[in-house]
Amino acid sequence: MSYKVKELAPDSKLNARVMELELSGKKIVTPSKTIDNSKATVSEVNEISITLSPKTIASTIEDGDTVLRKLHRKIIEDMRILNVVIPEYPAIGFEKRHLETIDDYLHPLSDVIVVPKWSGILSAKKDSMLDDLKIHSKKYIDEANIRNGKLIMGNIPMTVSDKIVNGLVDFYLSEGIHSFVLDFNNGLLTKNSNVVRSIQKKLDSEKLSESSLLYSTNIRGRTLVDDYYTANDFIAFGYGVDLMGNYHMRGRENKDKPIKNWTFNPEEYTYEEVPMLVPKSSINKIENEEAKKISQEIIETGTAYDVVKDKKGAKEIIDLKNA
Image 1 (cartoon, rainbow, N blue to C red):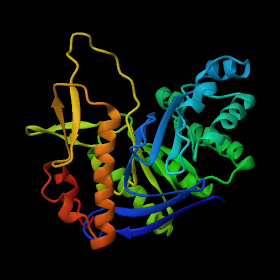
Image 2 (image 1 turned 120 degrees about the horizontal axis):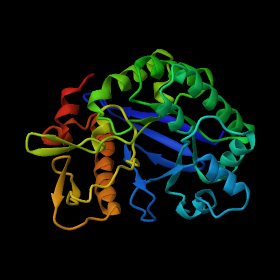
Image 3 (image 1 turned 180 degrees about the horizontal axis):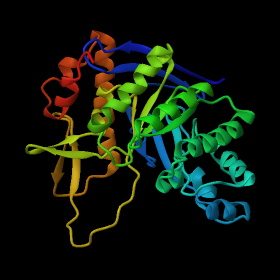
Image 4 (image 1 turned 180 degrees about the vertical axis):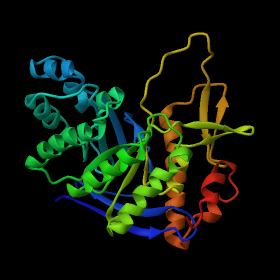
């Protein structure tokens, strides 16, 4: 195996920690806020979301000019930066050749192997959802393990029932997988914090927490609280998340609604409306610089409490202290 996940320092007051990751010969320290398909080296994690339909995969096999064939263009060739490809599969069932093709393209490019988001199964909402998720995931894991030395992360849908989440966690643990991408599917982290805690407790009971990685994605970014918008995705570190990912879900455009521009305020951990468009890479840079301050403070003093205690957007994670 060419990876190592190790807890360096837990926060003594907050539900946060610092992890050291050695993945594919690259080393980073968490917490870290990812960048989103950007060539700007403002973060240590380049997150790439890709949707792979059966039609796209079949076209790739037939030598079509598809997103799979273009995926290499989104990879940052820099030993300081992890490339993490998070696939989504919007159908149910797949041919073996299709599964092989996904793995053949993603495995060489992604520094971490992430089990796909099985959105076709999730959308169908059948009684067999848990079994279907496990069957699809098992086939993907088996294919990835044919030739593999990389960390495999399970994909946990955070807006399904507790029964399904618990069943998936138990399944992944039985496969030797204990690091997870937590997909909030446009949900609020605060409303799903019980699920995060349940996963943490399970990892604790199996004595796996100190070698497990938690990675959030698709958290609804802003919530209006009084007169400000909390930066929900950023404050995920205060819930025990190690890598704070981005939002990839697409909604219908409302042409009658004016487009608003936002930026991250590190003084308050809030998102604020601004008159001019701020490049996403610039926002990611500010967020990641703040994440590094948190990491350094935990290492040096044992807690980032003094860094975040007066930030109004961090009120929820202050209330979680010693959780």
